[in-house]
Length: 131
Ligand SMILES: [Zn+2]
Image 1 (cartoon, rainbow, N blue to C red):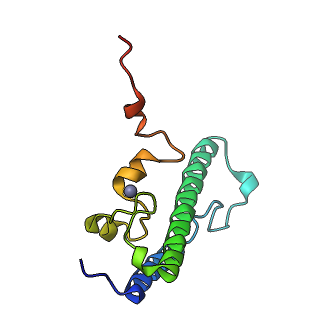
Image 2: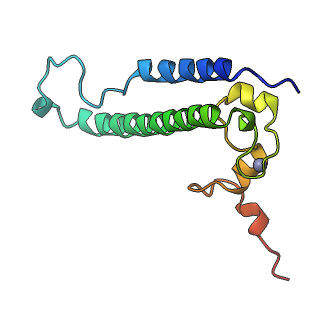
């Protein structure tokens, strides 16, 4: 497989990073500033609270993604040969996955097997029949 130009990969990652940064944090405060925050009426409060929760979760996801992109950029700079290879099993990451997630540092198998924080999947393999 022809390896890609590290500069090209960096440019791609940098573009992704910029795009994310341009989105900016979602406003956790009323952006138009006309009404004072104290004047929020009781009916609207629960909704705006929920909106804030959603917004802050999105901001967190964005931060996580930004960090992943930055880590990928560091990897490309330090070891361009290893870009596109899984940091866990060192197997090449599927090109289609890299197209969608250029900052991916693990192959799908390792990603799903070693998800650090959400037990969203992967617990299936630990299930046992008890009889
Ligand atoms: Zn792997």
